[in-house]
Length: 215
Image 1 (cartoon, rainbow, N blue to C red):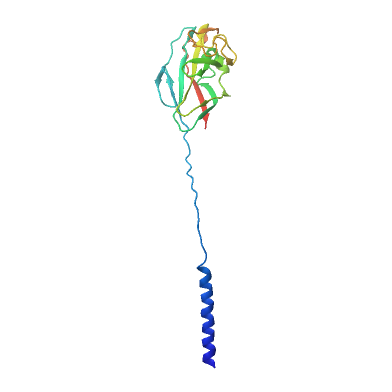
Image 2 (cartoon, one colour; image 1 turned 30 degrees about the vertical axis):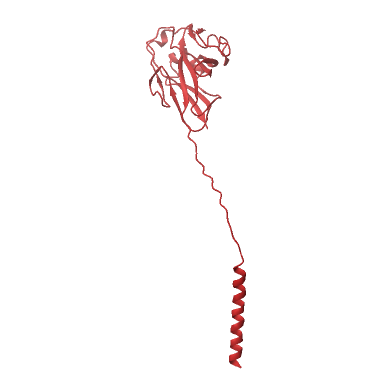
């Protein structure tokens, strides 16, 4: 009696295991995977100019020194080319003009003409600033985008007295009055400014122009 009960219980246990096994063998499974690689771009702009004496092809350019000057002079229209050698477009967002001796008599008497180019290498068409250097020592917002491997250009002329510059008599930021849209500039117009006086004799300073970019 005792042996029969034990044997029956054993058969019931085996039957239970058989049912569980049969159910597990009937389940199908599958899966899919999606992967995306993300690479951060590089923002890099370098400068070049025919007037460069150091740093050509880098982000820090030095233009040729000028002087000793007379009381009326112009440095000429020095063109600087900005080249985007990064991997993303570079948006020009700020421009800052500065000098190492902002409180000097020379800084107070110099004038500066700065022009941007609508067609790089061809047409300067917009006055960014034309007037006393002392009033340009600040940061201003600008707009423009340099495509990857693309260029943009600006021209800076520091002067005193009535001298030829691309700005001519335009002392308000905006389109050049002496240049027709799409025209090639063949001659500068006169930018009238006071000549240097005796208070500046022997003084020297550096003028810098810094452009900020985002991307």
